[in-house]
Image (cartoon, rainbow, N blue to C red; front, side, top):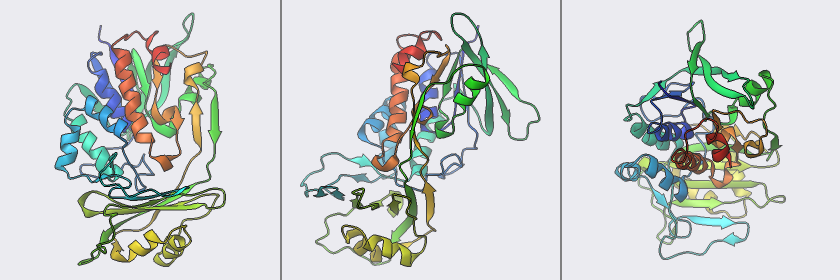
Length: 365
């Protein structure tokens, strides 16, 4: 009998999960609702792709373990390595961090589109994964077995199809992110979904790409060659900004507004926004740059934790991960690294068991 695993969602969590499944299942199918861009570019399913992103050291190690050669490909594409205090100034609620003579920890800073395309280039080399694009999953196949129900596959419809396709599977992995419909599907099947806890951080982000003006050079005294990062100090200080070097000599300006404040979209408003901050540093840096696109804003959805780890009615054959279970405030840059870490945990669990009855409980624990 052919053992099939289905992954819902083709982002970082989905690609990493599909890759770790190929060594344990005869057939691995990844269903992605968008179409992957042919070149470096954002997906419609990632509305925050224009904002500040970083891949923490844990995330880099996990992805390298899943996709060997990831670090080498990043180096070939000359991704900037940023170290706070060494080549990037960091102002925390306690003030400026000290200037360091050597890098302590280097996080990867590049556009989300470039990072995903780098992972995707390695992912698409895996011929054992069946990728189905423009496929929207509209339900789970659920059997009400004893002593507990089981997920036995999905139904999905490709863009332009008149009828849905049924895809049986021994394991379904929900890596569909914040927009996961799993709770609705379980409710419709008469199963109480996991408890949820939500918190609205009242944050709005704005992102705009820049390049240095022709002939512009920072003053020699500016050691922060890769940018500056100024954090908020709520509740009295509700604005933050980052101007960080990206790939291909791009720089990304990210504005953060808390407590329901709005993000300006024009040059004069941006200068005024930066002038209100605790330090004028980014305000003083901006004249060295010119924008190459428009400001894109993103209203952060609610932070959410779905407590799968204590779900009494958890069916067999189903695992959810990354933002389908827990949505983070992106201000600390944890989301992508957690997605990769979840796939790494799934890999460890699969080395212990592939049983559809045992795997979900082991993974959620």
